[in-house]
Length: 365
Image (cartoon, rainbow, N blue to C red):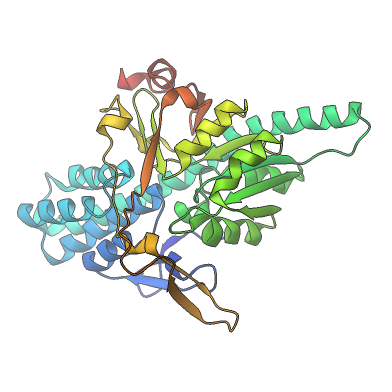
């Protein structure tokens, strides 16, 4: 499959408009920094790695118009503010700024474009490695299930995974993070089944994860967000696996709102909780996720309304509460490190602790 962010024959940067999924696969042209900023803010592109890549290209496009120091700073600050929780965005913008800082203005746009391309290439390689690292873990768990089934005289049972939000291919430039190992296992013929949280209020699980898994032929079942704990109590979940938008130095995990509740239910039912992420999602400057990670609060209309397809096939948005009901809409929550079994990144698996993370990233000591 092609990448989720590419340059067409006309030289225009293009991506998939995720707000049109799952009912339409619509391409989105990103010709200016305004286009990139709007795509990030309005969640036409989402997923921390993909947001970072689009932000990097947005800065390059801004420099084509004005390559002065002031314009560089303003464009970077504007793009960084588009989605404040995902650290990959600022990380990518900082990389581009560092690449062009000492260059003559006339060279900056080309250098920035090249750096954005490097960020994309690295994301693809990184996520492929995450898939391999995670697949080893899941493969071992699946083999244990197969052995137990053999002892009981039953057919091999599918490994049941629960996800929250979307951490698949379209959340990255390619492969995905939390879904990458699932795709590998399925391709190998290992029985696997995914419980897909709907992920209110934007329903990324229902609209994006379910769409992706269907495209790959992976068996899956959509569930209400509140059903996860019930499934765990009845032994129907072997492990929880999610992506992340930011992980602190000590292993606290910021992810889509509701992840914390899944982690609590998992701990209460002795279900392992894994988080898959590229190294660009680590924020080594922070130690306390609850106190220090900025949590984006989005438009309350996302909570008060829902969008979907009617029986007649038209797409509509409907209000689900009384006209005068106020609402709040936090986009993310923080799962404390103590609730995370392991982190999975391109360098391997590690404990969600400062010691565990630094064992994989000794250069950050």
